[in-house]
Image (cartoon, rainbow, N blue to C red; front, side, top):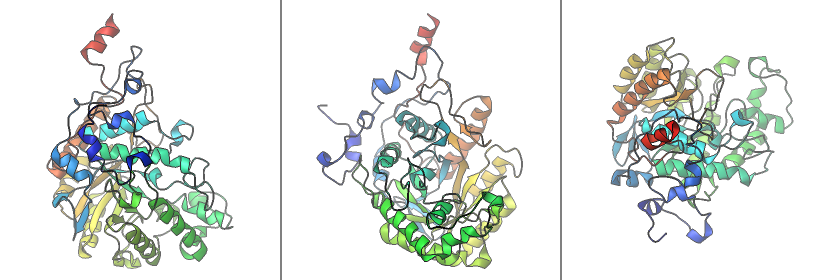
Length: 434
C-alpha cells in the first residue's frame, strides 16, 4: 500500500514493526476486510439475517480513547476525564469455544461479534476465555506450568479487534470450574461437579494451600506479561483492557462454596496491581458478602453481582454496600430476556440514575457461523443474537437504548468498520432474484 490509513497510527505499536506478526489486512482497510473474508460469506445461497449500519471512519475521540486507560475516582469510572459507564455483553468464547467442537473461533466470528457490540453502543465486553483458559490441549496452560503459545493467536486477535472497534475488555482470570484444575494438578482428587462434588469442601484448597495459590500467581504473571503478536503491547500494558477480574462466580452460590476469602482476594489483587498498575481490579466473588471482609479489600476497584433473574431489591442492597466503601458496583451478568423478576426496562432506568452503579453486561452474545447463513447455537437459554428475528430485534432495541442512555452516546464506539457478515444490499438481493 502506498498510504496506510489512520488505523495504523492508532495501533500505537510499542515494538519494532519488523519484530511483530503482520496484522491482517482488515486492520489496514478502514471500510472492511479482504474480499476473501467477506465475499465467501455473503453468498447467493442464503440471505444474511442481520443488517449492520454503514461503515464509518473513526472520530478523533475514537482514536484518543484507544490509548487511554479507564480510571476510577470514588464510585465512578472515567475515560479521557469523562464519566465512563460499562455496558455490553459477555462473550466468553473469544479465546476458545466449546460450541464448535472445542476450537479457536475464526476471525470472521470475532469480527462479526465486535461489529454487533459496536452497533449496539456497547463499551465493554466481558471475555472469559481471554484469561480463564487452562486444562485443555488448546488452552493457554494445558498442564501445570506448561504454556501453549499457539493459544495466544486467537487471544491476540480478539484484543486487536476490540481495539480497532473501540471496545474495552474485562477479563476474568479463572472461574468456579477451572479453579478445580489447579486443585487437581496438586494431587487433591475429587469426584462429581457443582453441588454433587465430593469432598464438598475441596474447592477450599484453591484459596488456602500455598503451593496452589503460588501456581495460580505464576499463571497470572505469565499471562499478563504476554506480548500481543499483532500490536507489540503486553497485556498488562494494554489500554484496550479495562481490567482484570479475580475470577468468575467464585462464590458459586448454587454449589455452597461461599465467597472467596478476603485475604486471598487481597493477595491476588495486589499481584495484579503490581503487574498492571493502570488496570482496574474487579472482584470475582459473585455477590456482596459484607460480613466476610470482602468489602475491606482496598485493592479492589469494582464489586459485582449476577442477576438471574433481575432483582431490583438485591441490586439496591449491593449498591448501598459498595457506595459505603467508596467503590464501584457492576451488574456483571444478567438475564436480558425479561421473563421473570424485575422488568428489564424498570431495572435499567433505576440503574442508569445511580452513578455508583457503573453499568450492566448481559449474558451472553453469540453470532453467525462462518458461512453467515446460520448461527452458532448455545444451549443455556440465555444466548443473544443481534437481529436474528423479531424477538431478538425487540430485546436488542431495549439493550441498545440502555447503552446509549448510560453514556449519553459519548463513550460508546463511533467507528463501524465493515463486518464479516454484511447485508447483501440491493445488488446482492437482485442477484438472488436473477
